[in-house]
Amino acid sequence: MAITAIKGMSDIYSPEVEVWQQIEEKARQLFARFGFRELRTPILEKTELFARSIGEDTDIVQKEMYTFPDRKGNMLTLRPEATASIVRAIIQHRLYNVPTMGKFFAIGPMFRYERPQKGRYRQFHQVDAEVVGSKEPVVDAEVMYWAMLFLEEIGIRDSELHINSLGCPECRSPFRERLVKYLREYEESFCKDCGRRIYTNPLRVFDCKVEKCKEIVKGAPKVLDSLCGECKKHFEKVLFFLDKTRCTYKLNHHLVRGLDYYNRTAFEIIASGLGAQNAVGGGGRYDGLFKELGGPDIPAVGFALGIERLLIVLKESSPQLKIGVPDLYMIALGEKAQEVCFSIAQGLRKKEIYVEMGYELKSLKSQMRRADKFGAVHVLIIGENELEKGIAILRNMVTKKQSEIALDEVENILVERIKKESE
RNA sequence: GUGGGUGUAGCUCAACAGGUUAGAGCACUGGGUUGUGGCCCCAGAGGCUGUGGGUUCGAGUCCCAUCACUCACCCCA
Image 1 (cartoon, helix red, strand yellow):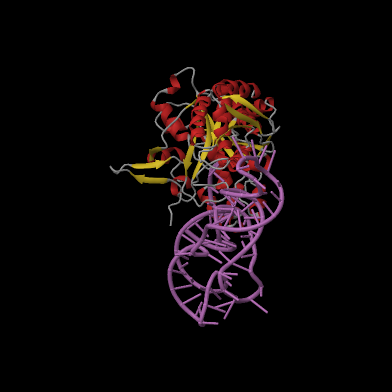
Image 2 (cartoon, rainbow, N blue to C red):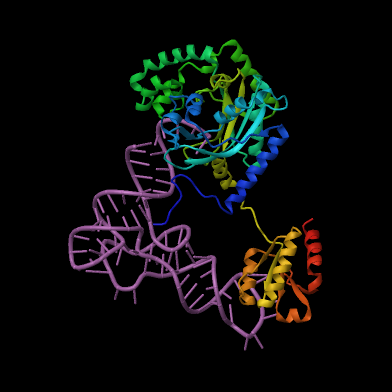
């Protein structure tokens, strides 16, 4: 049995990889317009970092991390998300003191040990953004706007922005108590999972898919009604600025995030076609995380988009993009001709022209077929006859017109012609 | 970790209720007069039917196990 890739981890190759490149390129461009700087961190970190930031009791830490000892016995973990590493790096290098910084982005692989399914893989990739140093609601709105604009620019139109506020530690715990009290009254009626959730993570009961649970939850106290004055004001301003961006959004008081570090603003971007996982991205504010990780008390907001999920959504709507069509396809008939072809090809490539050539000395017919498969418009043919006359034949595959070009002028003429066409 | 579905050619799939050399389309290679592509025609190559057992005179087909893929649950991007 041949060796295959690890479960849940895939090879990305053409033509799909070109879509990846496009998405990444687009993200970089858009980040630049907003003043984000790239921050590349190692994909491996000390396990403790994730345990402390994501939360010891979360599923991610409990059962989804790729954790193993290195040769010295130190426990290491492949990052399951980007925020923790970025915050760690910012603290470590005191990047919060650099006045021109504060907006960071990262693009790269994340790892979670889960059973793969549609839109969920063990190695997956995220576009991640973090803004640190401001507690202002404008920032929350701007970050969400970035995400929505990005989706629009890569061609995803029918996505929904869901938003909620989780409050701060002060208003969250009284709310939690009230919620648990309410849920307990119906304890018997809940599904098995929710019965457990009441004690492990009561907020999660909100997004249970079981009908009877949904019914009960309708009457439950809402987070938004329990916010303290400050949190309420913050949330209202976030919505105010969001309105200014003309992004449409939905208040979703059932929205809960799975990581411990979130407070106040929480949001998710939902799109169809993803199967059971309907979120292409999500994020929120995490004002306490820096302090938690031993840094100064700095507020921050961020989010992540799953590239694989973006691709799934895109696949349904966008047409296949045409890629890699050579500017010129060169055909050589015979060894002598191949020698000439070879040097012309390299010369043209040096002048930034995409040249393909047939490396096998096959019949003209077979080489023409290959040229056609590449979709080449211009084909240059050199055989024994041409060599004798010191020329090459240039055929336009669309018009079917052929012309002769002197061999020693081939490079210049082609460069000129092809560059002119591509303008 | 739990449950369902599926494994036949590079890809998409056939093969009545077990029965001869396991087929088709697309893709691939060559050819249709000597050196000209697409369309069409002809030919060719390509499979230990995921793997290992079992039942049977006989297994792609039935049974068991195992692996892989896939979907869903838990949870998340």
